[in-house]
Amino acid sequence: MTLVETPSSHGNHLPELALRRYRAGEFSAEQCQETDRHLAVCAPCRSRLRMLVEEQRAFEREIPFERFAGGVERARRVPRQRPRRIWFAGLGGALAAAAVALFLARTPATGFNRTKGSTVQATVRVASAVASAQRSVPPGSQEVLEPGDRVRLGYRSEEPRYLAAVSVDDTGEITLLYPETGPALAISPTATTTYLPDSLEFTGEGREKVFLFLARKPFDSMAAKQAVKTALESAKGDLAILANPTFAGGQQVFSWLFRKP
Amino acid sequence: MSGRQTPTFRIIPGDKGLAAADARADLHELYERYGASVYGRCSYLLRDRSKAEDAMQDVFAKALTHYGSFRQEASPLTWLIKIATHHCLNILRAERAGWRARFEREARAKESTEPGPQVFEMRELVVHMLSLVDQETQAVAIHYHVDEMTLEEVAALLGRSVPTVRKRLSEFAAVCGKELPP
Image: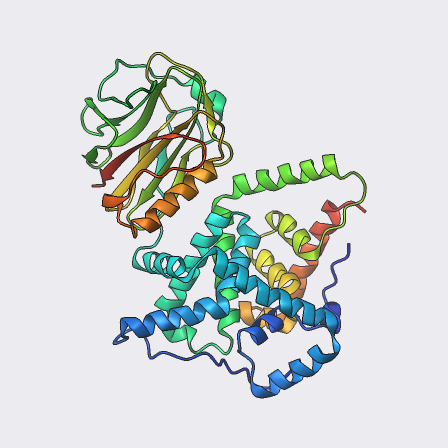
């Protein structure tokens, strides 16, 4: 493979950007005529142009205009700001399934929500920056956070499960919390509460909604993120009416709504 | 092709005083003309549909926010592609460690499943080598090899001289030469 640094490296064909500009209607009448003449005798360029037309069709199928416009409007209103992790000393940023087993924090059961007929429970513990007291927050709750409050997610399951956690804020920014990418974390049965490694401190203003997915079957964390995205679109970006999202796999979903300081 | 480039899409008179319906109609026009190109650039660099969609929304949000300068552009598409490229490279820089690790993993996986000389499409070669060079060289390589702009066009777009662009391309070619199998 050779990379040649001369303008002639693109050969006698129309450059990619020129074809895109032609398709977008940016060319003058003179440029259009010149391009049309080339296309009439150049099958590869005609083929590339057809691909660009099809690319736009595929884009419109994948991202309908309403979704596009809503996302642009949200991005325009408030620049994206990702939740910031507060790492405990020695933990680092990488989160593997093994790490979950290594950093267990077991506490008596308080503030739990148990789904009827299930063996899975979830909770959140909030640690204050100014007081030593911690408080538990059951799923489905709304919680007002004070400056510096740190949030930690916990679960208990009598059976093996696969776990992912996702958060979304008022700007529509969706963040994979656990794991940050790849397949959901495989968790072992535990009779006591197990807290996920690291606390979370949410930056920015407004609200942040956190979802914890626990499924019997393996799934990819992106499926959870996509499910949140779909639910957010249905709720027109309003976290107050954002329902617990679901996707194929029969998972249980727990959620918390936080109002950031 | 020569002569002045004339964008044909309708120009709107700035943000203030715009009726919501007009703004929406103009956004729809941007969507139809440029949506796939911007989304394609973001997908190409970020390799993640969800991140690419977010980045694309950010780019169009910037276009609307800076509509005054955007509408002055001879080629709105070129402006959008430049902003999208810059935005995605910034995202990748922020995720540098994970990015490099991911490409290294992909490269190892490819080696294990496809022994022997590897033939990359140019755009695939470029994206695989990006993490090995600085951000300016990244932008130069993308605009030259992927967008197929001329040296002069890349230089004008990035506000650099043609010799500087040529030097960046030489550096990029040297890195690719070292990294690629013969």
